[in-house]
Length: 252
Ligand SMILES: Nc1ncnc2c1ncn2[C@@H]1O[C@H](COP(=O)(O)OP(=O)(O)OP(=O)(O)O)[C@@H](O)[C@H]1O
Image (cartoon, rainbow, N blue to C red; front, side, top):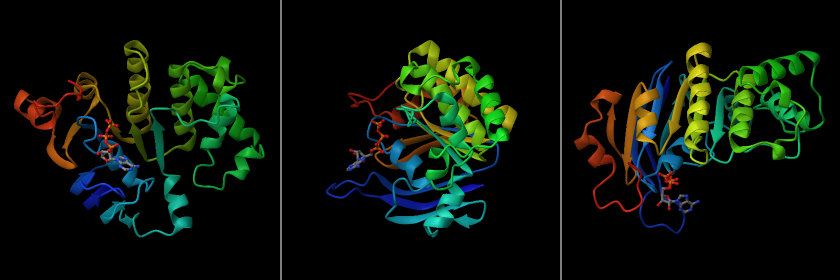
């Protein structure tokens, strides 16, 4: 169970808060998609959960433990339970797909271990199996910088598989991919959710994808939750709350 209690965040130098007293509860096995126009606070929300962004106020509680109250060592440990995929993949591009995936098994540990190549035979086999699951076994030895965007995101998903997290956070994981590749990547994320029982929370710009994959949709507008319900409850009126009509650059 993930709980956000009164999370607020105003970035230094900004007048308007990016998030204002956000309260959310996400149960095990949910597939939550966060929608909102550009600047609504989606990224900030996702990143406050694993403290890539520090909230000014409020508490994040993961399975009864206060993430916001953790010291650096405890936080590293909890990050082992929380996988993350990003719009721009965040892989070690000079290293092979295989090494990147193996490094996923060390999430929550100091970075020097994977970088020294301290991998066991079991790590190597598990990483290869994860690459096979996303259809990239034959690319295991390729440097990540030589892969396409969709392939990179599949490596990132294989890295999450290797990590065996309980929660997957995604910060616009399909925004830089074409429609066909995006759907394929969403299919792999859905597989992680369905087959591996991972709770998923993603922010997306794509309302159709949210409807297709989410068990629950959260709508953010100007840092506040303006919708929280099942995809079938996402009416035109709800969409207008999430994407106010004066919106110039929000996605529909
Ligand atoms: N590092 C930062 N420094 C200052 N302001 C920031 C920073 N990051 C985000 N913001 C501001 O906080 C608000 C929320 O941004 P955030 O990136 O969370 O929105 P978003 O919904 O993810 O937008 P997008 O869909 O465009 O990525 C915006 O007004 C943004 O300008």
